Length: 124
Image (tube, rainbow, N blue to C red; front, top):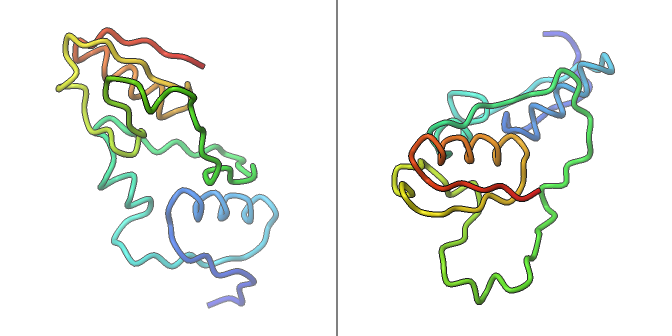
């Protein structure tokens, strides 16, 4: 094995993005992952239509720790949850649903809701 400068623990989205950045900078690395596939959280615990989209050059700072607090959400009478809990639009058929955000997850979820008969709106 060649000498490597970086050991990446975990082949999730952050680990894969880090690997992409290191590749772009020609810095050798090794990824270790306890699961039997990359991005196991996305592949095994996400909604049915989710596809893993990796940019060819991805070196943006990780902002996943930033949590958006929506004023008034605590008094919202409907159901509100993060995309990580979404599985399928089947149970939303005939219901009005608002998807907040138009990133890959938001657009995939909005499409899935629409094809399952939900009255789907997106806010950006």
